[in-house]
Image (cartoon, rainbow, N blue to C red; front, top):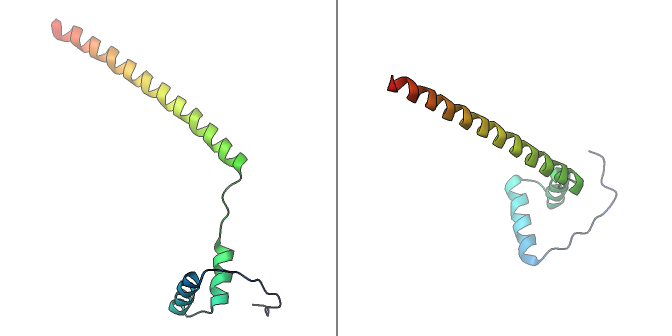
Amino acid sequence: MPAAVERIVVQVPPAEKKTLVAKAKRFEISLSELMRRGASAYAAAPEEGALEALLERVKASTKEAEAALDGALAFVTASNKRLAKLERR
């Protein structure tokens, strides 16, 4: 890892700093390393446009699933009617 040459100041309440220091000690790393790893691992939320596209796809697939279920129910109903006619014979 290259030598650190830049400083980033992160201000936190004293209680949060205490928690972070304890966590760094448990992992046997420095507080700076804990913060670097946390920042590197952070995955930002998807862009709003991506969420909108996902929502539209969910809506479309829900309509497709509902149509498939309606078709299956209609098939079962017709099948039950055919069976009922056979039983009456």
